[in-house]
Length: 147
Ligand code: IDP
Ligand code: MG
Image (cartoon, rainbow, N blue to C red; front, side, top):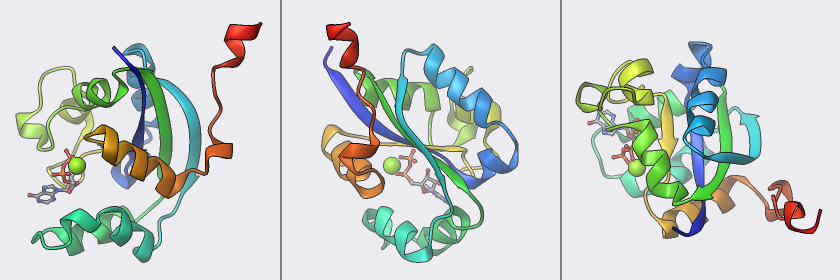
């Protein structure tokens, strides 16, 4: 599988529940390596821009309100097939439908407060990573090759 990068977010409910470490532990255990991490309190404009594809959906306003309600952890994850792998570890959008052992099954409150975000395609991953991380803020593992 190809080495990929994906954008992961621990949403305000995950930070509020004090499970940042547990979520990152699940991601790392699945073979995903954080190559960029920062915390942020998203502005309304940032959240609206990030979720622009959902702007016509009935839940859009609530989603923006939720995503700006507290701090989030923004992460770039790297690994083999990272985009699909992250989606698998996250579980279905609705925690009621999420598989056993997934982050959303174990930690999410409901279909909105579902603890984590993950890019859903290579194209969206590129856009989402660039939205929050300049390339210089992403640490490569490439040094391993020359050590
Ligand atoms: P995803 O996060 O699993 O990719 P999307 O369909 O892209 O799911 O939706 C983005 C986010 O919008 C979800 O993670 C969730 O927080 C919220 N959301 C999605 N569907 C609903 C809904 O039916 N009601 C309320 N919030 C929703
Ligand atoms: Mg999505």
